[in-house]
Length: 76
Length: 191
Image 1 (cartoon, each protein chain N blue to C red):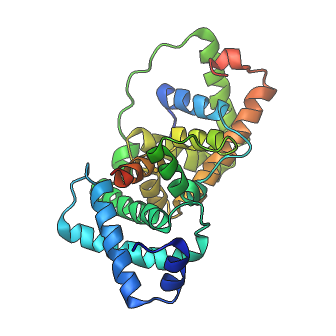
Image 2: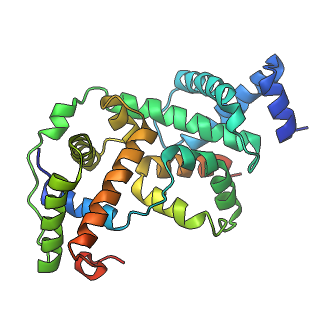
C-alpha cells in the first residue's frame, strides 16, 4: 500500500516539525481543563506548556475538537 | 454553595450518592453546552453523562488540582462522548473501503520539495520497522479520509495514546533519516 504524493507531503510536514518531546493525547487530556479555563478567561498559557500544546493540537484534530467543545461548555 | 475541589475529591472517592448525583447533573449540563454543534438526543446525553461519571470515578486520582474539578471532570466527559459519537459516525465504514480509495491527482511540487518527498519515501521503506511502516501508512490514509485517531486506534486494535506514540517514534526516525541525507529546512519549506 503506497502513499500518494499528497499523503507524503502531509507526512513530510509532520515529520519535519516533529520534536523529541511531544504531548500524547492522554497528556493533553491531563492539561485540557487548565487550557480551557485559560482560554475562556482570555489568559495566556504558561510559557513552558504553550509550544507543546500548540504542536499537539496542530497534529491532532480530535484533541483540538474536544478542547474547543470544553471551552464552549465553560462559556457563560 | 458550589463544592470546592477538595470537597468534590473527598465525596467522589467516598462515592457519596448525593455528590455523584450532583456531578452527573453537572456533567450532563456541560455536555449539552459542549456538544451543541453535534446532533445529540436527550437519551444520548443521559448515556454520555452516566458513562462519564463512571470514567471520572475511575480516573479521579489523575486530577492534579490545576483547574476546577468540574472542568476537569467535563474534559473526561467530552472525550468519552466524542469517542462514542465518532465511533457511531464511522460504524458503517470498513477499513478496506477507505484504504482502497482511488488516489486523487497530485499537486505540483517544486523540485527541491520533490527531492525531499522522494527521500522520505525511501526512508519509509528502509528506516521503519514493518509494523511502524504498515501502521503509519494506514494512519495517514485513514486520517486523510477524515477518520479520527481514536477510531483508527480501535480498528487497529490499540488505543489512541499508544498509536500517537508509535507515529511519533516513526516521525522521529524519518526526520533523523532526512537530516542524515542532507535535507534542510529550506528543502522542505518549513522551519
